[in-house]
Length: 173
Image 1 (cartoon, helix red, strand yellow):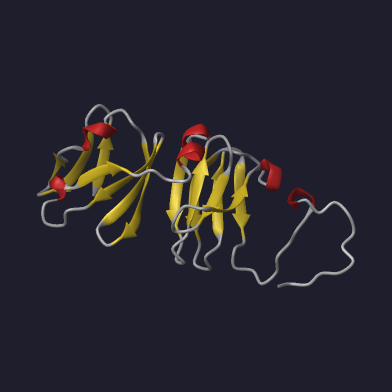
Image 2: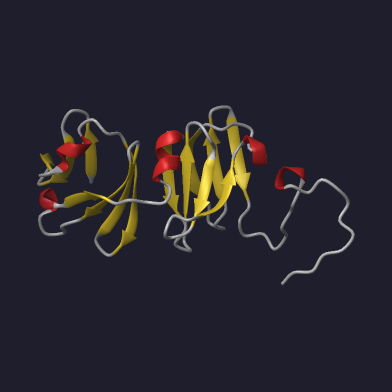
């Protein structure tokens, strides 16, 4: 178990006590909003300053290492006050913010879709993201809960998606 402590950085639970993780001082005053599995022993750290990577040392967790990882959503994370994140079974992620709802991103953090008040969310403040057993997204908002059905065979486009008139025919390529 890793814990981020204000003014200290990370500590790891080892031998019934919390032990300081060497080199984690960079997080002493940077809020870490989520830790998500990347691959193998690497984990994404979503922070108020963008994305970092932790290389987890299984033998000596207190010697795990960290480095800044430039990411395509860094600016979005910083400007919108990233607050939560969850990895989906398909390898994609849902990232929540305090100012602009949530984004659904692929494994390289390219934005697939944005969810905010412009696209139908009740509120732009997402405090928690959750994936249910069916792979759909639940967002805990400042003023309610929103459900996003990702695994539906039906796709809906509405005014919020730019459909402003009658659709007379369609063809999927």
